[in-house]
Image (cartoon, rainbow, N blue to C red; front, top):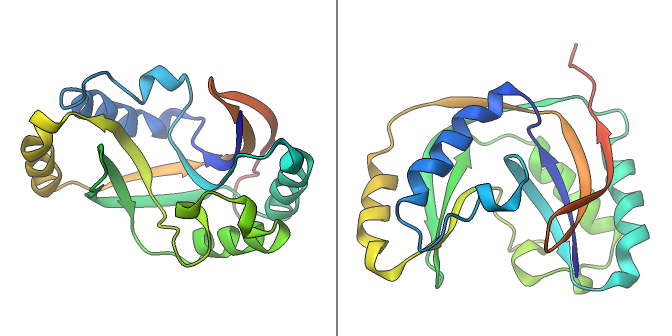
Length: 178
């Protein structure tokens, strides 16, 4: 069982991302995101060692201390090549996501973290679909390239989850900003 540290959108602003999940599901062999039973999110770190669960909770709480809800704008859909191909919403650059990632990485030895989430490898992203079938690869990339909207989502909860299946083991609601 793995443990992850995330920030999630647990409010109505997440609906637009969830609508994108439904559109992207048409390219997947099985819809991946709704199946999680978990709201749109950014993952800062994933650890496969149960030995870091308490450290992950503490890192999540320390990172959230004094922070407020985070409004993130998305204007592009990108992809990780895979396999399988993964479509994701790219956040407009901000300094907060990388700062939170760095704080978590400093609190727990990155050697325990999955390679894609380690410092220097991590890409801030909000996954839209993680099971793009090979036969739909070109259509999925065309969909991503044709995206020409802007959406803004309020991320209002930081948490630690264990998976699979996704189960929240600790969370903190973030206060509204000033």
